[in-house]
Amino acid sequence: MRKSKTLKNGFTLIELLVVISIIALLASIVLVSLNTARQKARDARRIADIRTIQQALNLYFDVQGRYPAILDSLKPTYLAQVPLDPKDNSAYEYACLKDAASGGNEGRGFHLAAILEDTSHSALQTDADANVSSYEKCTGSANDFNGQTAGWYDIKP
Image 1 (cartoon, one colour):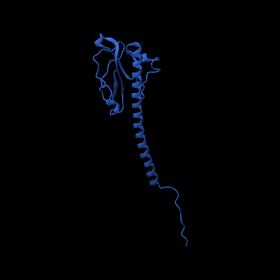
Image 2 (cartoon, one colour):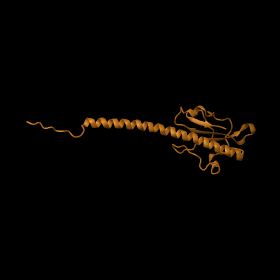
Image 3 (cartoon, one colour):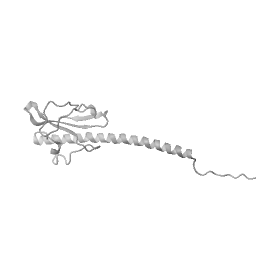
Image 4 (cartoon, one colour):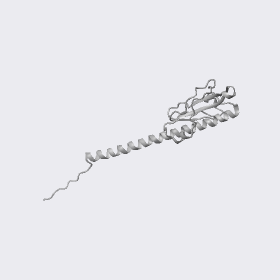
């Protein structure tokens, strides 16, 4: 008598479930890494935006002798567009300050900031960390803010 050999073609249900679970695990690891990379990219963009705005403010000051009350005053001469936060397109924090020492002249200082998603970012070690200024705000400017709040990358002249 001859024994017939039957070959099983295909995979068992268990084998398929194991492969699917491994693929799902790898996909979740990749997604978590991708979110972290996106967060770091947005923070790098925020820091670059703040430095770009700072340069435009300095150019404005050189020509006008004061800082503008609002950032939109930088358009179109000093900036084509005022940069916005890359995550939600909100404006960066900006306050134009009077100088109390020179009789309250408008636009003698400013406070500019972005809120970083990574509160342990190395740039936060070298920022201004300025408190709310005792100087008055310029006419038409937003109120000053506390740059010591966690995650706030702020600069002053």
